[in-house]
Structures are given as structure tokens and as C-alpha cells.
Length: 336
Ligand code: UDP
Ligand code: MG
Image 1 (cartoon, rainbow, N blue to C red):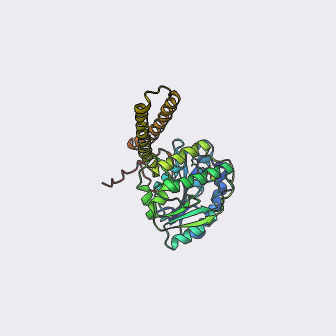
Image 2: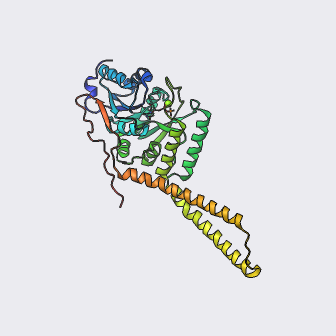
Image 3: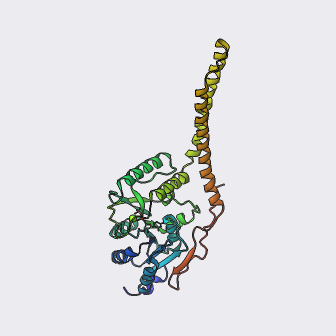
């Protein structure tokens, strides 16, 4: 691969964002498959690797790739901030007229980008890959993912297209829309659906991970699912009003019942068991509702602190590029 010449300066047609977290063994293989596709489908391109605080040799390899071809750029975080934030940083740095997001482990076959670009040229601004199967994931993870999608479908503010993930092409207009969203708890899958624009799905078969293992533990996935639901639904907050109403109505009937019983049958002392059961039950319900309030308040706290979304330790750029110096997001316009 020769140095980029005219391609690296100005606006490339296509930018590819690759979040990288300890993927040293995958990067060369990814480039070998990605670059031929990009040269075929776009007039010019750039590849932006976002090193999400890797502790392996990923950054050294990225340095080599950058020296070999300046169209490979890299942004390296000061620590691990998570894939969602890595994607946000990629969007901040991408200059292309369209942006494609791919995983570094070759589970997103680069050849599918050809279809993405074809759809984009037909006028679609949000072209998302939909997984035909998730056989690469464990059975338990597949079941949990299914459940999450159906819960989100019922309670979420936006629907999630079935099987749609981060592997997608976004037109510049969609990219700007995503960049204008200042939230810290970023659930990209919801954000992509929320922005709208002319969208279309492209089915693809998930590949096997090229090297290494998944970076998402069940704990991390649970946190992620909670973030998603809480960012796109206020139902967990509101449901307590209805539960409260039902419980109060029930206790009113109980009161009437006991008053009548006292009037007609005199005072009846036994009832210790029912008393204890109802006290502990309602204490539990109150704790739970307080916990949910706490989850939302925690998120509000995280948002109002307005810390920068990420901190950059190093950038590998061509001289001509204008990288944003301050990654702090603009304050979105309040709707009132
Ligand atoms: N990733 C990241 N930061 C993280 C975890 C993952 O940038 O904290 C990247 C990872 O390097 C890969 C992509 O996100 O390029 C998807 O990760 P992985 O393959 O582990 O997830 P899975 O395919 O199991 O969903
Ligand atoms: Mg993967």
C-alpha cells in the first residue's frame, strides 16, 4: 500500500470506524480484507481506529499501519471507556461523506460494505446490517439478547430493528445528528433508531471471531442492557404510580373490612402473620422503587457533571487533518 497522496487530505468519500480493545492479533487481518473492498467501492477512504485503552500491542500495530498508509488514522484513549464511547469518538473524528462502523475482530464481514455503499448511493442514510444468525454467540447470550430486544420493543421509546447492531453505514447527515446528542450513557443501538432518516437493513452472516475472545462479560452486558432501557424508557419510573394506586385501593378495602369486622365481631387480636407479611412485602416494594429512582438520579448526576465523554492520549493523524481539540460535547438545545 502506498501513501495516500490526495486521498488523505480534504474529505474522503468513506470513513470506516473501528473500535479496538486488545485486538492486536486481528488488525493486520482486518486491513487485508477491508482495504480491497474500500478501494473498490469508494473514490477515497480513511480508516479511523479508536484504541479504547488497549493494554496489548494494538497501538504499536496501529502505528505501523499509519506509517505504511496515512489513510489509517488512530485515536487512543487514556483508558478503557467502552465500545459505545469509542464509536462516539470515531464519529467525532470521521470526515467522510459516509461513515461505516465495523468491529475489529472480523465478525462483521468487510465485503458487506459493498452492499451498504450501494444502498447509500440509492439514497438511504442509515444502512444497518442485520444478523442472520448469532451462532457465534453462546446459547445463553442469544436467549438473553432475544429477551432484551423484546422488552425494549415493548417499553422503549423507539423500536430496534431485529438483529441490527453497530455494523452499519451512516450518511454525513445522520453522523451530525448523532454527534449532536450529548448523552453520556450512550446506547448507540437506540440512538441510531431514534435519529430516523431513510433506513434500510442489509442481512449478513456474523463471522467467527478471528482471534481472541469477546470483550463483553455477562456483567458488562447487563449494565449495557440497563443503560439502554433507562435511556430510552421512563416506564420503570412511572409504573410505581400505578402500583401505588392499586396498593392504596387494596388497603382501603382492607380498612373497610376490618372496621366492619370490629363493629360486628368485636376486637380480634390474632393477625400477627398477615401483619408481618404485609409489612415486609411493602418494605420490599418501597426499596425497589427507591432503587429505580436511584438508578435514574445516578444517570442524571452523570449527565450534569458534563465531564468530557473521553480523553485522548495520542492521535495518529496526517498533518492536514483538523481533529477536534476538545472532545466535550456541545450542550444540546433544550426543547423548551
Ligand atoms: N470493544 C471496545 N471497547 C470495549 C469492548 C470492546 O472498543 O470495552 C471493541 C472490540 O475491540 C471489538 C468490538 O468492540 O472491535 C466488539 O467487541 P467484541 O467482539 O468483544 O464483542 P462481541 O462481538 O462479543 O459483541
Ligand atoms: Mg466480536
